[in-house]
Image 1: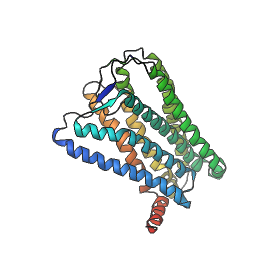
Image 2: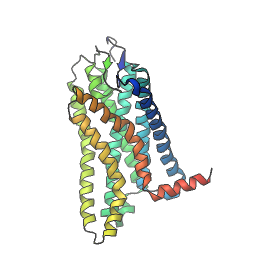
Image 3: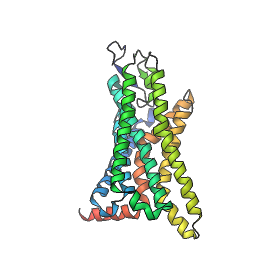
Image 4: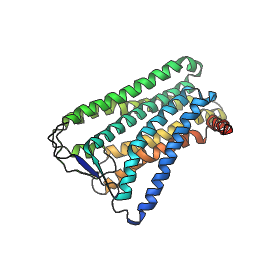
Length: 306
């Protein structure tokens, strides 16, 4: 990074004017943080110790939990400090690192959600070939490729940001270092990173979204062809949890990055950002385990060891 930068630290404003709601909001965030860490770690432990969960879907759920853990530990600790003290001062390097970790976790989650939709497509639309398609090698290779793509996207961001000259202002009206607030700190020509993120965003956000939509179109067609109501309900229940997670994740993500964030809409953008960076990582393990008999059974067996 250029040594001639005018700023070396930035101040995250977060949610100003909380007044009497500071402690309740802080306490709620602590509970969410603890629940997120515990829930996602539990999913990963259950997968490792339970033989009944050794399937492609649960493998990808653990990878999703890893993304959520990465995102939570990146965002929430700084957010807690911001809420408690009415703001946080972090170095410019820390701000960029936070943004990069955010990018790798979110881009990887988009890709994992698309692979999980493909898994449900094969399971429902082509069940006889499921075991031959969704092999352990395919799952491991897919995970490695996804994390590598997330790393490449982040590396591209770093290369672009490295050439920036940061002149201020040094105040970010947000609770974490997102793309737009970070770019506003720079006086350099930011066209390169905008072009890069447009290209990368198409492949890691819109590309997976199209895969998910296409998969569920075929899944819906297949389910509607099932003659019995019981059969249709059983088929739909196998993908309902994933569909809920996708709806929450992509719904808030697209609203935040598609609509403008000036004036009162900035507050709405913060709230929606709070949903997909803080609340969604908590909801994912709950949604996947709430109606899942295999996970409940594995948890019951795990309790017997203690």
